[in-house]
Image (tube, rainbow, N blue to C red; front, side, top):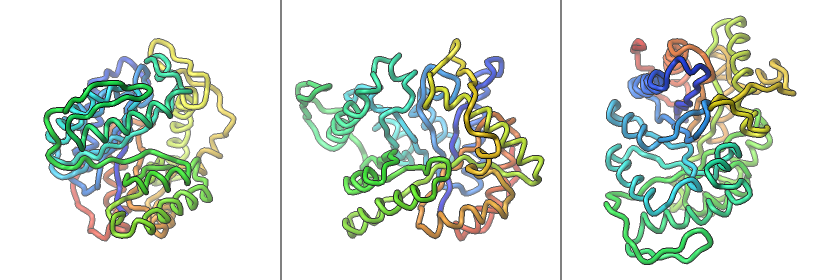
Length: 346
């Protein structure tokens, strides 16, 4: 089982500066590259300070220029917000500039606040995504593509430059039956069990494995990636403090994910939550190295290929670098079969 670092741009204080936020993310990517992490993950979001990354392909190229081997996943880019006729070319250029390390994760978009302010009503996101994905795949694999659909109508055209290799694509999907169908279409899968819901996870893995079994050799290369909030804590007091920070983060995240979407001058407002701090702590992977090994064990037994560790929820940058280092040295070798790479965080 491999591991990815989610480079989630959290920007709770405007005085900190977006340049410093992205410098912190780049530091994490560079450290992950040196310590043997399989990938880093970048999420696209607009118009808000929670998960603030409006240009994931640009950042992927920046990361590639400062690293040597680590994969760079967009998990995810929001296809309904882009015109596939221009976006397909941007993807090809990003793949070239990252020298084939780009894994394009795609999705429909989840925050009504940003989608609707950018002209895409939430009620249309699934239909727009489905057509956008079909157009994107056609443009990346064929020349002189024309289209006569609901959201796209255009005469024959060929994107340039042409891809130099097949573009690896990953689908963000939670529904087990959706996972089955997306796997059958040849996509890598990224998913998450809501709040650690184990039965949902079993069903998600089951959908993926059923599709791979039916595909035989054609599906052997496909991977299942699981996303979880995680951090390292040496003591109970440290664990409590980090869970409380995560609680404040979720008080903002829930506002735009499932709540009313109240945003003040780009800053997502923190709103009361029904879930207690203790209940949230039970669902997150914030614990000691040995507890982390115990909690990740069932994922490895299920055959999960990669776990995305989301460590950015308001903590100081050096603390997150220390956690990355600790995870790489004390946890990761138990699952990758590789010895820890010893290197101090810079």
